Image (cartoon, rainbow, N blue to C red; front, side):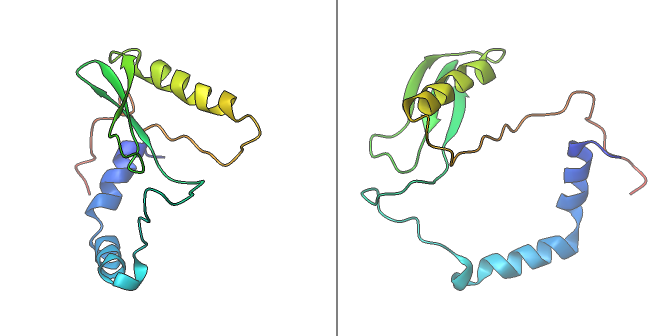
Amino acid sequence: NLCPLVKSKYIESDMEIESMHNAATRDCANQTSRGEPSDDVNTHFVTFVNVNNNLYELDGRRDQGPVLHGSTNRSEFLKDSCSVIKWYIERDPDEVRFSIIALAPTPNCDTFPSNT
């Protein structure tokens, strides 16, 4: 019953997983094309970041680079990002092909067991 941070440390330190990962990613047959910016693509990844208290959307398929969505701060970043995401959802309410993942530290989970 380990917290996610400790679980990730175990996975990161597992040499067998690292070896399998390296073998799979070295083979060109396992790589996919990024495609062209002009391609009609319905699914891809974007991310939101806080840079100097500004909320940016990073989308590698956009020619104009990062999109500034306004100011934010550390305590409001998640809420501000969700506001932009909500706008996208409301813009196309019948679209169901999306998912959201937040990468964040878990409070009170900053120790790695020393008996491993």
